[in-house]
Image (cartoon, rainbow, N blue to C red; front, side, top):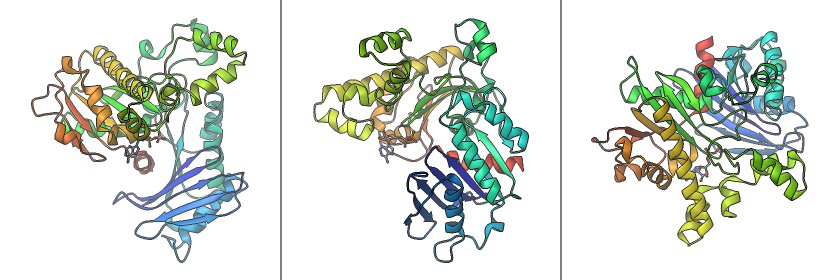
Length: 395
Ligand code: ADP
């Protein structure tokens, strides 16, 4: 079965065509600058990448260009659209309505719309992608796979905030958590690797990328996670502050004489390791600057690792122990210094890192020694494959 996986942003659309039996990517690509001008980058497996500047006034035209590219006689990978058997859509917010992936129907679309105000930047774009695909492939079954769904198993004590209860009931203010597709994919694999599929298990997943979150997974279910009502909470990230004292918001608005919107924008886009270092949000740049003696870059790296280690400690306490920890995403998979710095805090869990294994990057590997009381792994995430698997499972 060929599954077309779509991840629609406000001005971009990422896609992969995945063969579900072999789990091979047949083609993948990206539409950028939708609604501005438009550029399609299309990479068929085993062939040269194709880049086309084409006018994309809206997402429907972007989907239409992608479908043309997939069926093109030179750089296409399928004869015609009948070879697309299903479509899997990434949807950011499923609120409390969706605790798992679902096949898309009119009712589902309506329910996703009702979650729009919880993710005003993302959900409307995801819905536009869904309606564009439905218009061009009306007979093809489609699934919605939510970033929040995996975390719907969190207990109330983990997801409620210390606010008047009415705000939870009336406005749905609570912790939702994000990166659920990745946390689910990686935790499943970690539980397999430690041979605990049919036993009790306590694992902690560190998804460390531009956006970062840590999740406590007990017996395969999310029981707590570091992102909250929005992805701004928790760890210090590339440009996001992570958790701060909420009183800072008002104080800063007064000092800068700006609106609450402006402050939230600073917390989302100008903070994190970029804001601290003044260098970059990219950890490769921070590593280099720190080695060149830049103290703020070094401080940003220290703060990042410290915060990750704190969440691991909190979640080991929440679960009364931890069997295994996994690192994933851009930083978690590639940056051995960050992994080492985090693990340096974990002596009390009996964590011992094998430096040779930890020096490897971008591959699935156990990085703790055989004698390490808690096992530590690097497990590459693959959200597109996870979406394709979910879609096939629903069919
Ligand atoms: P996003 O949240 O945007 O998907 P990523 O998971 O790609 O982000 O993570 C981006 C971070 O991962 C950057 O800080 C970068 O330093 C790091 N990273 C990504 N790929 C590599 C790589 N091949 N080598 C080293 N670091 C990488």
